[in-house]
Amino acid sequence: MECEFPTVNSNPDEIREIFENVKTIAVLGLSPDETKASHRVAKYLKEVGYKIVPVYPKEETILGEKVYRSLAEIPFEVDMVDIFRKPAAFDAIADACIERGDIKVFWGQQGLVNNAAAEKARNAGMTVVQNLCAMVEHRHLM
Image 1: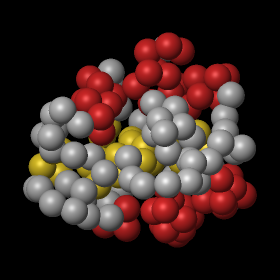
Image 2 (image 1 turned 180 degrees about the horizontal axis):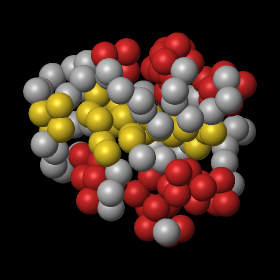
Image 3 (image 1 turned 90 degrees about the vertical axis):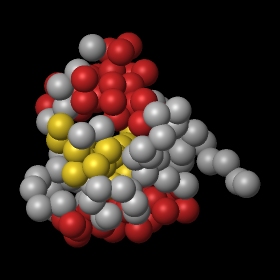
Image 4 (image 1 turned 30 degrees about the vertical axis):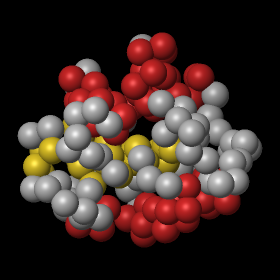
Protein backbone atom coordinates (compact mmCIF):
# COMPACT_ATOMS: atom_id res chain seq x y z
CA MET A 1 0.00 0.00 0.00
CA GLU A 2 1.33 3.40 -0.94
CA CYS A 3 0.94 6.13 1.66
CA GLU A 4 0.71 9.82 0.86
CA PHE A 5 1.68 12.79 2.97
CA PRO A 6 -1.18 15.32 2.95
CA THR A 7 -0.09 18.30 0.84
CA VAL A 8 -3.62 19.74 0.87
CA ASN A 9 -4.83 20.35 4.42
CA SER A 10 -6.39 22.90 6.77
CA ASN A 11 -4.76 24.59 9.74
CA PRO A 12 -6.14 24.59 13.32
CA ASP A 13 -7.91 27.95 12.87
CA GLU A 14 -9.72 26.66 9.77
CA ILE A 15 -10.64 23.44 11.59
CA ARG A 16 -12.04 25.40 14.55
CA GLU A 17 -14.12 27.42 12.07
CA ILE A 18 -15.41 24.16 10.56
CA PHE A 19 -16.68 22.99 13.93
CA GLU A 20 -18.28 26.38 14.65
CA ASN A 21 -20.17 26.52 11.34
CA VAL A 22 -21.01 22.94 10.34
CA LYS A 23 -24.36 21.52 11.40
CA THR A 24 -24.93 18.40 9.26
CA ILE A 25 -22.24 15.76 8.69
CA ALA A 26 -22.58 12.82 6.29
CA VAL A 27 -20.38 10.03 7.63
CA LEU A 28 -19.29 7.89 4.68
CA GLY A 29 -18.56 4.35 5.79
CA LEU A 30 -20.33 4.68 9.16
CA SER A 31 -20.27 1.14 10.51
CA PRO A 32 -23.02 -0.24 12.77
CA ASP A 33 -20.23 -2.01 14.71
CA GLU A 34 -19.70 -0.07 17.94
CA THR A 35 -16.03 -1.12 18.07
CA LYS A 36 -15.20 0.59 14.76
CA ALA A 37 -13.69 4.08 14.68
CA SER A 38 -16.39 5.36 12.33
CA HIS A 39 -19.08 4.44 14.84
CA ARG A 40 -17.25 5.95 17.83
CA VAL A 41 -16.46 9.19 16.00
CA ALA A 42 -20.00 9.61 14.64
CA LYS A 43 -21.50 8.86 18.06
CA TYR A 44 -19.27 11.51 19.63
CA LEU A 45 -20.14 14.10 16.96
CA LYS A 46 -23.84 13.39 17.45
CA GLU A 47 -23.51 13.69 21.23
CA VAL A 48 -21.88 17.14 20.93
CA GLY A 49 -24.74 18.40 18.76
CA TYR A 50 -24.09 17.72 15.08
CA LYS A 51 -26.71 16.08 12.87
CA ILE A 52 -25.16 12.82 11.67
CA VAL A 53 -26.19 11.24 8.35
CA PRO A 54 -24.96 7.65 7.94
CA VAL A 55 -23.89 6.61 4.43
CA TYR A 56 -23.40 2.85 4.36
CA PRO A 57 -24.29 0.01 1.96
CA LYS A 58 -26.35 -1.92 4.52
CA GLU A 59 -28.60 -1.32 7.54
CA GLU A 60 -31.70 0.84 7.81
CA THR A 61 -30.63 2.88 10.84
CA ILE A 62 -27.33 3.51 12.61
CA LEU A 63 -27.10 5.59 15.79
CA GLY A 64 -30.86 6.13 15.47
CA GLU A 65 -30.47 7.86 12.09
CA LYS A 66 -31.78 6.77 8.68
CA VAL A 67 -29.02 5.24 6.56
CA TYR A 68 -28.50 6.38 2.97
CA ARG A 69 -26.64 4.35 0.35
CA SER A 70 -24.95 7.36 -1.28
CA LEU A 71 -24.54 11.12 -0.95
CA ALA A 72 -26.88 11.59 -3.89
CA GLU A 73 -29.76 9.95 -1.97
CA ILE A 74 -29.67 12.45 0.91
CA PRO A 75 -32.66 14.77 0.32
CA PHE A 76 -31.47 17.70 2.46
CA GLU A 77 -28.44 19.97 2.77
CA VAL A 78 -25.17 18.46 4.01
CA ASP A 79 -22.38 20.72 5.27
CA MET A 80 -19.54 18.22 5.61
CA VAL A 81 -18.51 14.72 4.60
CA ASP A 82 -16.45 12.75 7.11
CA ILE A 83 -14.87 9.93 5.13
CA PHE A 84 -14.08 6.49 6.52
CA ARG A 85 -13.37 4.89 3.14
CA LYS A 86 -10.17 3.84 1.39
CA PRO A 87 -8.27 6.72 -0.27
CA ALA A 88 -8.93 5.17 -3.70
CA ALA A 89 -12.62 6.04 -3.19
CA PHE A 90 -11.88 9.73 -2.55
CA ASP A 91 -11.94 10.73 -6.24
CA ALA A 92 -15.51 9.49 -6.70
CA ILE A 93 -16.48 11.03 -3.35
CA ALA A 94 -15.05 14.41 -4.39
CA ASP A 95 -17.04 14.19 -7.63
CA ALA A 96 -20.23 13.35 -5.68
CA CYS A 97 -19.61 16.31 -3.36
CA ILE A 98 -19.09 18.65 -6.30
CA GLU A 99 -22.22 17.33 -8.00
CA ARG A 100 -24.31 17.99 -4.86
CA GLY A 101 -22.99 21.54 -4.64
CA ASP A 102 -23.84 22.06 -0.95
CA ILE A 103 -20.91 20.39 0.79
CA LYS A 104 -18.48 22.85 2.35
CA VAL A 105 -16.03 20.46 4.06
CA PHE A 106 -14.26 17.38 2.66
CA TRP A 107 -12.73 15.52 5.64
CA GLY A 108 -10.60 12.38 5.30
CA GLN A 109 -10.18 10.67 8.65
CA GLN A 110 -6.88 9.82 10.34
CA GLY A 111 -4.62 7.73 8.10
CA LEU A 112 -6.57 8.62 4.95
CA VAL A 113 -4.98 10.81 2.29
CA ASN A 114 -5.65 11.36 -1.41
CA ASN A 115 -4.06 14.64 -2.50
CA ALA A 116 -5.50 14.59 -6.03
CA ALA A 117 -9.05 14.25 -4.71
CA ALA A 118 -8.36 16.81 -2.00
CA GLU A 119 -7.09 19.29 -4.59
CA LYS A 120 -10.21 18.67 -6.70
CA ALA A 121 -12.42 19.34 -3.66
CA ARG A 122 -10.47 22.47 -2.70
CA ASN A 123 -10.64 23.79 -6.28
CA ALA A 124 -14.42 23.35 -6.10
CA GLY A 125 -14.51 25.60 -3.01
CA MET A 126 -14.52 23.05 -0.20
CA THR A 127 -12.36 23.26 2.91
CA VAL A 128 -10.23 20.12 3.03
CA VAL A 129 -8.92 18.18 6.02
CA GLN A 130 -6.94 14.95 5.62
CA ASN A 131 -5.29 12.48 7.98
CA LEU A 132 -6.97 13.92 11.10
CA CYS A 133 -9.69 12.50 13.34
CA ALA A 134 -12.74 14.77 13.62
CA MET A 135 -13.40 13.61 17.18
CA VAL A 136 -9.82 14.21 18.36
CA GLU A 137 -9.67 17.63 16.66
CA HIS A 138 -13.04 18.67 18.10
CA ARG A 139 -11.99 17.65 21.62
CA HIS A 140 -8.68 19.49 21.22
CA LEU A 141 -9.98 22.72 19.66
CA MET A 142 -13.44 23.14 21.15
